[in-house]
Image 1 (cartoon, rainbow, N blue to C red):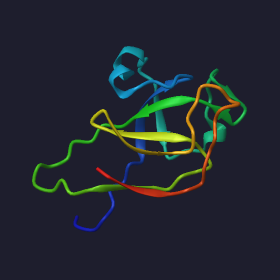
Image 2: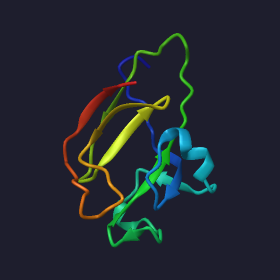
Image 3: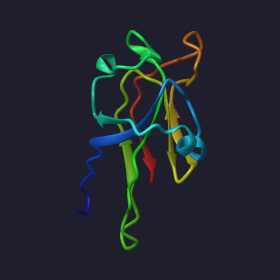
Image 4: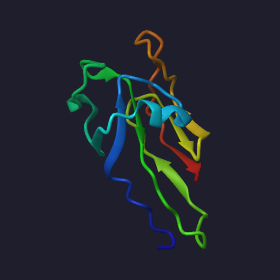
Length: 114
């Protein structure tokens, strides 16, 4: 597996219409799943206004203790997001906000340590 990326596609847990911290996720989670990757503009939620809206996604990974030197290569769409690992903010893209007038998306891809 050395040098090969982990494929994070599949079903992720999602809380539609809310930006919440990782420690609050369980209190808001309703059992909804979303297939990633997917097209943001085709996502269905009452929290979305056309292609604009907010949601909080979570994927759980159990990594082997013998090979934990990993990183995430986030290929960003024109979006704003934050990435947390074990409840710790490791990076993000643009300005995340519940207010459509305050959101500042960005196209920049980044590499973050896992």
